[in-house]
Each structure stands twice: as structure tokens, then as C-alpha cells.
Length: 369
Ligand SMILES: *Cc1c(COP(=O)(O)O)cnc(C)c1O
Image 1 (spheres, rainbow, N blue to C red):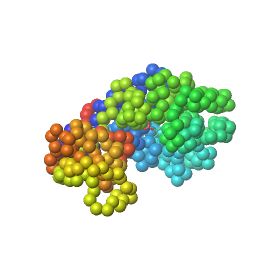
Image 2: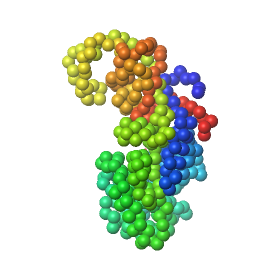
Image 3: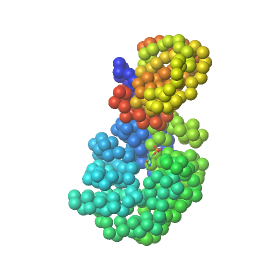
């Protein structure tokens, strides 16, 4: 690792990412499921994408076009997927930089066909079915089947690569054997109409991994789009109580420098109004405590609640845009000004930290790629 004087630092252990990808892709592979690696959760840092490919992912995906361009430049031969259904204003870039996109609107797919015809390209689409989570996708499956036929027989530059669904994002609906069976049945209905097999039946994201581990993913699902479960398995452990065997949750480490250590009362003094973000936090009076400030803030990590301390006795008790407020009273050895503290990150903290220009990114084990 290169030494740095520019804190905060986000260390990204590429060896761990390769390992995590290997664990997920080999387990899924044994069950007939291919994994596209999703890197929008880490601002599509291309080395993270390369680690996923090294670990067995068969393509890379993101939801944003600026990130897609970076991916295409870094790994020109890789199959790229745009996950957010495309904007009409980005169709030209879409067909240039990505091979496949998730779709739910006929008008958009017609625009893709027209753009492809103009420049002699092809583009693959996955039609999305909404199985109850109520984010993107068709609720009317007859309409979806009709559009599949339309693409197959009347849009020569658009390839219907498959169908998919997204669960657990807006409506917090879990993937189950039942709703994924519905997806497989829908795929079979489309296959019957178009007279061929679909390449992909894409049964969701990281939130489908717990069901996979339980053996509940129905036959027919042959693809998942996994980001978080490889980048940062923390949620699988904390919210799903289903750690993925062999996957580590600490590939990302945030390091922040201490800029103040002082004894302070734990209860604010004066009239309590709202904090910098218009919220009214709850404060507890625990008397005089020893408090530290580390130089990193909400702009970099979203909230102190999305960080996990690594040091015994350390507590992250608050944050503002640029400050992280820590209670260090119970630490066996209290930090001093200039010391650097390390934190684990939940998904939102990883998302913000990788996107923050103020956070220096340091890649560990580049030789793993
Ligand atoms: C973000 C996203 C994924 C990947 O989600 P993870 O939780 O990171 O695995 C998959 N599919 C779609 C449509 C997405 O937007």
C-alpha cells in the first residue's frame, strides 16, 4: 500500500473482492446460475469490476451512463449491462457503451431499435416483470408477452436476451420460490410464443442470495445481478442473518484522522433546535465523556450510523457534513490528535465514500487482478 497524507482514505482490498466473487459465482454456477457483477455500489471503480471478472462474473453492470463509459473503456470486451431502465435522452450512449439493458417501456425499446438501425448496431434487452416490489417492470404480463413477440419478429436490431425481475428495492418484497416460479412460467410463455429459448431468466440481485443458499431458487432461473453480496456482505449478515459462506464483509475500510479530543458533557447545552440536516436527534445525558472528532462527515459516508467501528470501546455518536463525533471514553487506549481510526462500512457508506471526491481511494493487493 502506498502511504498517504490525504485522509480520509478508503482502502479497497482487491484480493478480498476476487475471493468474494469466486465464492458467489462458484456456488451459483454449481446450480446453473450465472452472475453479472454490479459495481454501482462502489461508483464503478473499474478495479473492483476487474476483481469481479477475475472471480468469475460473466459481465459487469451499473445503473448510470457516466459509469458505464468508464467500464467500457477499462474492459472493452466485457458484456455490460445498464440496470436502470434507460432514459430516452441516453439511447445513443446506451447502444455504444452497453450490450444489454433492462427495459419496461415499448417507446424506449422502439427508440433503441431506431438508433441501432441508424448505425448498424445490435442491442440486447431484458424485459422486466414487476412481481410485487413495485419499482420497475410490467405488471400486465399479457402486454409484456406481446412486446416480447414484437421485439422478436419486428425489431431486427434489438435482441430479446431474456426477462428479469427486481425485488427488495422499493416495496421490500423478498424473493421467494413462489414469485420466482412466476418469473420462470412467464419466461416459458414467452418462449412458446417466440419459438426459442431465452438466454437469461434473471432472478434478482443480492437479495436472492439467501434464497439460493436455502435451495429455494426454482429451476429455470439462470442469472443473477449481484453487487452488494460481493462488494460488501454486511447486510446479508445483519439483515438477512445469512452470511454467504467464504464471503468477507471487510473488503472496504474507511480511515479517518482525529482532529480533536476533549472532555465534554454528553447532553448539548442551551435550547435544542434542529441539527444541520433539519433533524432533531435524541441526546442522552451520560455526564462528562471523552469525545473525539474525526475529519470525515455525512458528505462522505451518508451518516455515522452507516459506519461500524473496529476498535473496542469506540462509539460513533453523531455526524455533520464534515465531522464524525466519537465517544472514546471506554476505549482501552484513547486516540490522540493525529491518530487514524478505521471503520467498516454498510452499503450506503460505501456508496457515498466511493463517490466522494474528498475521500482518497487506495487499492490493496493490485496483484490479485
Ligand atoms: C442495483 C441493482 C442490482 C444489484 O443490486 P445489489 O443489491 O447490489 O446486488 C440488480 N438489479 C438492478 C435492477 C439494480 O438496480
